[in-house]
Every structure is written in C-alpha cells, then in structure tokens.
Image 1 (cartoon, one colour):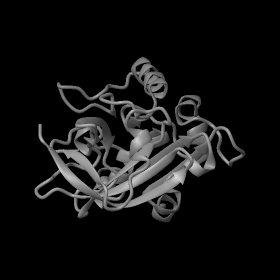
Image 2: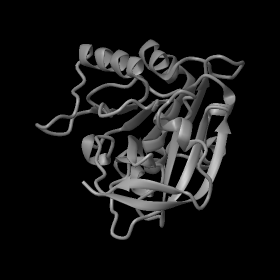
Image 3: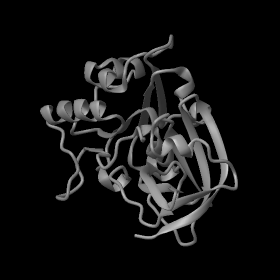
Image 4: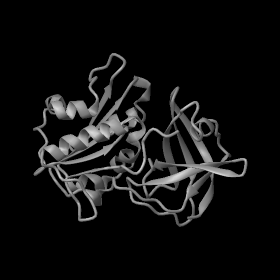
Length: 248
C-alpha cells in the first residue's frame, strides 16, 4: 500500500513522554472515526512506521495523532523531534475495530482507555453522531501522571447530559486513582458515576490500551457473558487488538 508524504503543521507536548502532532491530510483520504492508520519517518532510505489511531474526525481538514515518547524507540524517539514543516509519511489505507459499526446500539457506551489509547475515542466523542445510538457515553481514561491526561480541558468542556468524562491517575494524588479496568470490574466506576452496573444486554464497551488492560477486560467480559465483535457480526464489546497503544 502506498505511503503519502504529508507536512507537519503543529506539535503539542502534553507531558515529558506524550505529545500530539497534526499533519496535512492527503487528497481523497477518507476514514471512519475510531480507525487507525500507519504513519512513519524515512531514516537512511528506510521507512520506519507504526500504527496510530486518528485523533481528528473524518470531517476535519487535517490529521491528528497522539503518541508516547519511548527514548529508545525506533520511531517515537525520532517522531518527538519533528516540527512544523517536517515530513511524515501516511499510509493510504486506514482500518480498525473501534468504530460505531463494531458495537450494537445500547443504553450506555463505555470507552476504556489507558495512555495514548485515548486517541480513537477522541475522534468518536468529537462527532455528534456517536451519541445518537446511546443514552450516555462514558469515557474513562487512566494514566500514571496528571500531565498525561491529554485533551483534558476539551473533554471536560464536552461533558453534558449524554457524555461523562472520568479521568483517573494512578501514581499521583488525584480524585479518582483506579485503573479504568479495575474500576469497571470492581464496580467502583459505577458507584463513582452513579450509573447502574453495566450489563451485556443493555450496555456496550470499547477498549483501547496496554495489553494487560485489554487482556484483563477481555477475560472479565468473556467470563460474564459479553460477546466480542468478530467476523460474524457486531457484539456488545470491541477492542483494538491490531496494535499496542504504547508505540516504540
């Protein structure tokens, strides 16, 4: 699949190890909110590329991505250094399993993210259509430090009758300090939000985060009669298993 050369238009550092970048958008490049695409840099004639969920929505003129900075990472150690005017290569074929067509309509939609796993959910909550199939959308984002709560102000501004934002910080003092998976499984998330416990018959779950969180939640959901979306059709939960949200 061809890669398309694009120009960096903005770089925003969130914390010492997380940042977002905006790029020009290729002509004719279309995607569904919640999908990911492979992006990369050319180094010594070789393209180093990784999969990144798209933060921006399909109706915006630019592409936006959220990344972690791994000092020894083959790509992120270089990506963190890009500045407006630099070149990033974008694959022409987006894909992914965190779109609205991957979950059935329901009562409440729970989005559970760790770290940069927030990215696809930003694309979804920025789109009013996401809320049309659910009474309420609840986004839970757990990180280690307060600074890693990327897009926090924007998310707080979106809170309303049909949207709840539940930030969680695990290694610094904060109002809610449970990992999103632990909070869901223990029921603390529902006590915190004053919502009824999620059930597979009424509610839907989307997962995007580190492999441990994905494994823990998948095991819990499977053991409690939830059905993951697969090639046979949309279930009541879905996760992005195609890549790890912490890139290198």
